Amino acid sequence: MSQENVSVRKPSDEEIKAYQTWPIWQKEQSTFDWFYDEKETCYIIEGSAQIYDESGELLVQFKKGDLVEFPKGLKCTWKITEDVKKHYNFG
Image (cartoon, rainbow, N blue to C red):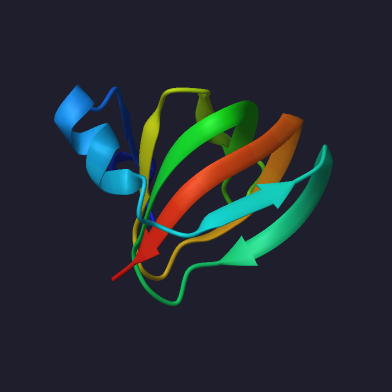
């Protein structure tokens, strides 16, 4: 997967309201490998993280207030630099 397939942007206020019904996931500062077997969209409520590709190159970084979309098939490493809390949705 190439980095242009991971997107980070600021959502509108209307979009943020819609995310309030999505489940919440939380994780403390840590580093772990992850594989996306389907597309994930998430809204970062708290924290920050960096995402690296399989070769160790930085793909994206994001923080509180960002909307992040991860494509299906992405293999990456998460490095949570500040405890993360996010709303998420698959598909």
